Length: 390
Ligand SMILES: Cc1cc2nc3c(=O)[nH]c(=O)nc-3n(C[C@H](O)[C@H](O)[C@H](O)COP(=O)(O)OP(=O)(O)OC[C@H]3O[C@@H](n4cnc5c(N)ncnc54)[C@H](O)[C@@H]3O)c2cc1C
Image (cartoon, rainbow, N blue to C red; front, side, top):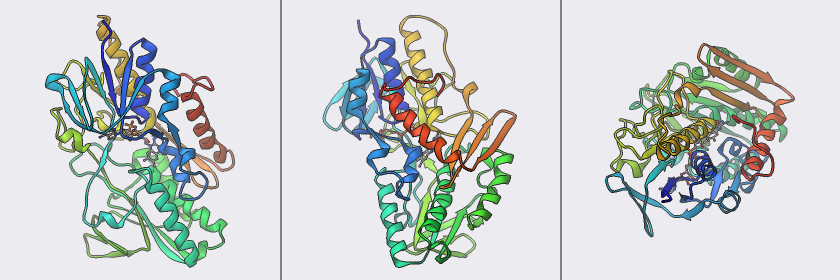
């Protein structure tokens, strides 16, 4: 009899899992509270007018039509693994196997409402664009861009710094193009002593050259106490005045998960083993940002890792069903791969065990990330072939 397989979440991880499961021959149901897949890595171009909101989305209906999975647009309210049920806003689904892929949430802090984040609600990218345009119209201003961590997470996987660096460099370049760069102060802030070190020593050393080149000052190594309408207030009493504060808080667990019966870490991420199977359960898997990734201290939650995990979980569910004992693992596949866009170029960052590199790509870099965006959209829609491992 056909097994009922349900995937929760229509982001990088959930879509990849649904596609893989369909390929194995299982009729899969995917639940998402958005009717589009948001391609976060290229959303950094919305604020600087290089992409529209629609350019950064793929309608889920198109993906469902292409790959054949059943799509349900609804809000997940509760997961009850003890009786194999998922409660949605408007119905209850039961399952034989479940893959949870609903992404992560943001750590709350005092005054967070005075900040904007490129890493949460997709529509925020448009708000940031409008705020930047207002400042440009005004003719001058102070912009603060930073990120934080999650003290409850002993790994660094709750920290998302890459998009903050990309915004810093892109904003600087955009303001220069508008011929108003000299009228703006752009400051980077983060509580860590060495923010960006996760990318490796090589990348970390080169970052300071980028800061110099784009005329960005930095305030790091001091804890953030709170945000006010026009400032970042630090634990030592110092303040950073700003007309626009962009902040990526440390990641934390998804609120639905803390109200469900799945095992979670102190930071709220779902506990899994190397096979992406949730601890203590035989038929529930968690993949992507929602899971507690275990690995080297520099391990990061990234889109391609979410896809690796989706592949691992789908493969292992299939082998479970066909009684094959072999299992795949995600930990040996952990690495950092990032095309860090700078507005007028890019840098290629790569890190794996015992190796890390950052290669500046001054001219070709302009096209590399654009090319990836084209590839991602069109390969997902089946218009061009997928390159294995990408
Ligand atoms: C600005 C930015 C830039 C980035 N750049 C890069 C990069 O250059 N390279 C890279 O590899 N990674 C990058 N990342 C990281 C990458 O985007 C994430 O790791 C990836 O999106 C994780 O995929 P996911 O499917 O786990 O979560 P998400 O993409 O967050 O998807 C979660 C899904 O779950 C759905 N959902 C959530 N709650 C519910 C609910 N209650 N009910 C129903 N559905 C729900 C959401 O609608 C969404 O469809 C970037 C991230 C950001 C934010």
